[in-house]
Length: 120
Image (cartoon, rainbow, N blue to C red; front, side, top):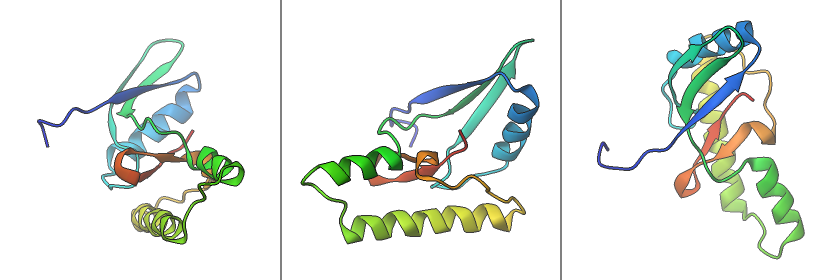
């Protein structure tokens, strides 16, 4: 929806080859549970990627806080996260891409309880 306010983030990388590889992969990916890529630029020192901003932390932080608080992650919430992760992985594997860094830190929390798979 174009009327909806949308936040963006800039991912800065000093590893130019890795950044270019990531940019070319993300440019062809459109999935609701994978971070959205909008464009990139670079200078002689760094690469800059404009991506969708997800402002609610990552799954690792959510799991740590659930361990120490009285408000635990429900079975339904855990199942929803798992189903969304499987959907994202099926999509990228269907494109011939192998995601080799699946960990809670690379699952970020988006608005309305959604998750987004990223590569940090």
